[in-house]
Figure 1: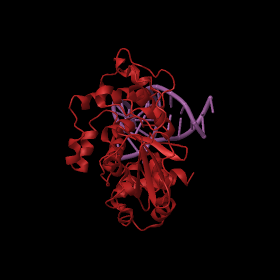
Figure 2: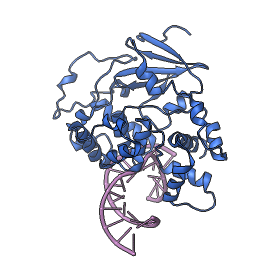
Figure 3: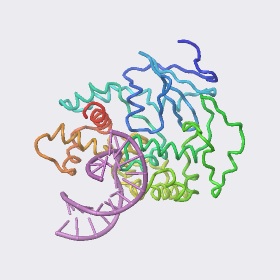
Figure 4: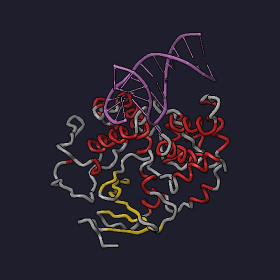
Length: 314
DNA sequence: GTCCAGGACCTAG
DNA sequence: CTAGGTCATGGA
């Protein structure tokens, strides 16, 4: 490996990995901020800017600032998970074998609950490309600047001057990956109009309400970790705009409840086509089937079906 | 122009 | 329980 190919990248680490498809994992509709450019993935995890790439046996991370402890990255990417122990729990049937073979190395991330919840509140009846656009706008306008690996042209001036009536819109082309995801408190102080200006349409009041519930302490996302999957699901669904599907996404992608099984149009299509090709099954029927058929890591199986259907089958 | 998107919610049968 | 309308926006 050549030494840092990026001017300004001051910290690099290498992690041995097996059965890890970084591209499939970062681009499979779990997270919405990763961008592939110049042969690597650029992203922000919390307040860390990071670039990721991989070779046959290793995953290589670079950050602009020194990192003493890489736990945040290893946790986010779930580097210590033995994928085979997960795959072994899948049902041994033809559709599942097809999905696993087609998506070797696909993983589930372990994201921040708020970013995940907010992103999926914005996801309803939106294509993934559009979700990415909305999230990018939201972060550009209301997130905190982070030290980036790419040229940070900010002359270190008045980021603090933007009060809520003086909402500082990006002066020109601020790079979408130069800001962290805005906190609940930050969004709670905005107006619905400011959120609608991020192209989120009817989802704006839902996001605003969720941010305010959390900022007020009426809903504690950290506390949900101590609850059962079903209990946490109920809590999440008390929010307007959060139904079963979005709650399941947060349970699966942020809290690691592997039993959660989000059913969107793609997964419904996959179940219908792969498991009930003859007669049409109601959505209730499909959900009941999924609850028993895919085992304790059903959510992981769901991600394989989702990605398989979206990338390999029309 | 038409259809559809990692939906939720409300109403009517 | 199921079917249909509504919400907003932009790709395909």
